[in-house]
Length: 476
Image 1 (tube, rainbow, N blue to C red):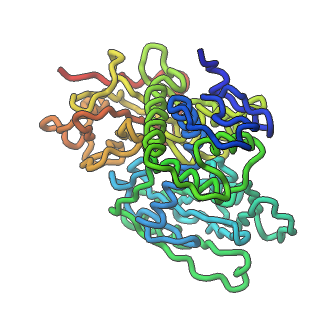
Image 2: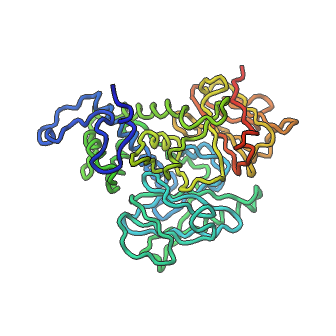
Image 3: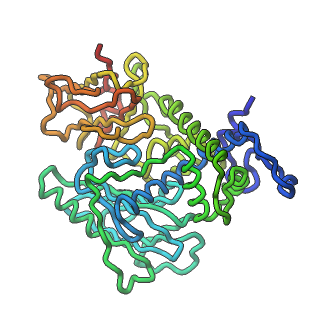
């Protein structure tokens, strides 16, 4: 029987990978000097599945990068943004539909890069800069190093040894690739407030340090209403993406032994990845199994928030490790994989700005089904100083349900209908119940789904349990 602990944990120093991770390596060192035997399909598929779980964070970054290039029409040095809150066409993992997002990819292989952050005046603009493994390197904006006063961040490539001028905030990366993900927060719902937030976005500057004396203009691409498809495909193309990223990135010490596992499935740094048709079929099966494992485990991930309710908080492993997922010198590969199947762009310093509750099941403990209609009773006086929102996601992709006419219900909506006591009843289903259209979010028949209930500016009644959210109830 497979040792589950050995599948879950990898030591982070070179030469100490747990040898029982998934299937054993298909080729011994001695066998490498001879003609390789045909791989055993079962062992090969298990190894490829373990590789997929390990590689999910960096493949997710590549999927978003390809969307940045392809769908955003952008290139390095450009910035894409959403001039309106997202609809279903923003296909990244678990966004919300109540803020304006800002996103860009960068690559430091040709040298350091300057990011100029404007002072957060008249609006909020904050977020994080993350490496290719989605480890947040620094927070920016009011919650970050510049404290909302603005500043110049210098994004440094691995091994950068030159002196950093005093006017820059240095950010040292271990990877060549990275990305920035920010939120633009208007001071109100008026057109003028939104315009002020978008004007602040356009004060961002991104350019190579080598051009700092005369920096080029930063181009901005509004992708509101554009299908921005940054979701990982768990098929044979997963490994094509992984091979591309492995080729571009230095091998981190913790991953040295993973290179042997990658080689055993055909990914060999410095050589083209060209699996034959039979191998592609095995890879597609393995990627599908990895995705199925994520989907099966996520409903029980994290912690049950109220002892008599189904709502759960996200796993704390990421936040407690600075999203390195390294605990006691070991890398929690499975937890990291699940986290980046579910989400992206965590902050370096999680604060008290928001609180998330997830539900995958109804009040009876049954998985939420797209073909049914459900009700969620939200008690009055929700302890959220800014706003709250209930957002629906496809459980098979962790993204908005494609073609959804309505992905979210939030307290920002002026049409939201309240009960006489100030409480609110929300509805989820393939069709809105008559008279409740403004309080409804869409689910697709035949598709499993889940929701995240977000509270922005959470207040003490949430934490002292004086306010509790009801479970989602199926309507017969």
